[in-house]
Image (cartoon, rainbow, N blue to C red):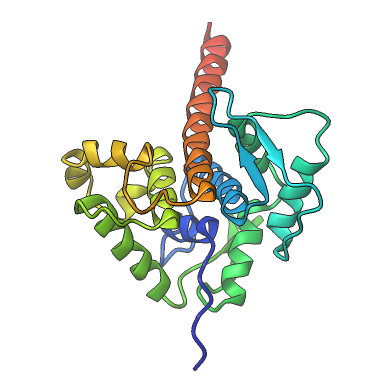
Length: 237
């Protein structure tokens, strides 16, 4: 039996977000931001984009760079054809608004045999798509990697695992893999991961930029929370 293809970071984050049995993500919208941040990180690891090291964190695309994956290609094209440079957090918000982002990522996992696709009716009226687990192996392997990265002091965390851990923490998905009580005891470790201070994981420039993308996802979540709070306050005042 051929080896399974390594899942992309946005696919891994969707696995964390989905209820294995119900195949739904619940009410939180942060999983979409999580996937968008991971898409930017994927492009950074591929060398398709560069994220500035200054406070602005402006994103530049490599001219003529191409990727085979349709979703990554669409996002890269948006950066390449933008009239002006944007901050990494702005691109995360832009990607999170792509039409059918969750469905597109989920269907890729259906093709890989990781999820099933089902439909049902909500209130007997609206069709809802669900993606329950078909093969739990990839998510269990992901959880094992996340637990090692967060709950131990290993200094050899691969960039992809570090990025997923940082984004999952920012978007409230990490408790799906690690108990909240344990996470409270590992705040210093989580900060270390978020700052890319783990030796061995920051060997390449692309890895540094992937971590910058993860932090951009953090910033995008914070911006969305602020915007939501302002809107709610304005509506009730």
